Image (cartoon, rainbow, N blue to C red):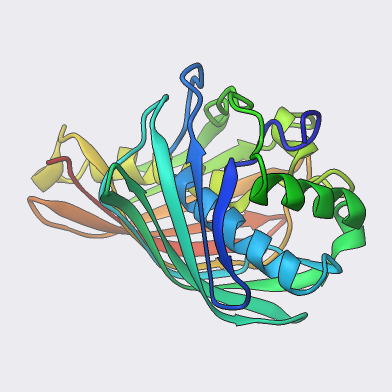
Length: 277
């Protein structure tokens, strides 16, 4: 694993595995990481569940992002802190994994996922099965080398329409080359769905701050629901992002998120952003 899984791998060690039922692990955000958006906490839980799924089917298949019923954020993680991760497996076979999970820091939970489903696809399309098996043995043994992640760059987003307090449309230019493509995935580079959600969340926060009841407030994502990833985004693609403000109070706002490529739907979700405590 020293040369693999260096740029977009968020499980350092698997500490407990009950095949087909539950998996626990941990991940320490390197102290030198420059940017670790909240969406990557969800990525960490998803990756932990993926290890349970891949080992369950003998590394012949791997899950990819599909549906997430609800993600609740109660806090953030800072460089140097350790996320304790857990996932409960509701179903796992060669067709899909269904799971829920949590991330906590020092005993206090910061993220919870419910009703997530990841379709299974042939492992050989994405990575070498034997290499992934070896990585799994490292994770359930001594653990992965520390300090592998340097952070992700802020997304390059170009606004193309802005109706203040109502709607934002923008273009997201996915890089043709980036470190995370080496991990996601070695044989078939795909722009991570969690980074797409991060870009949409960035726009949602900008739009919500324009609501009269929240003007200038310090906001953060608190809840994301009905996430549907419908297709892969490849290196170099341009996505059209759209965020619509649905409602706002003095404490929070609800918004609708969507991403399209060449007019076809890529992803949809709803998000609630709230005043920071």
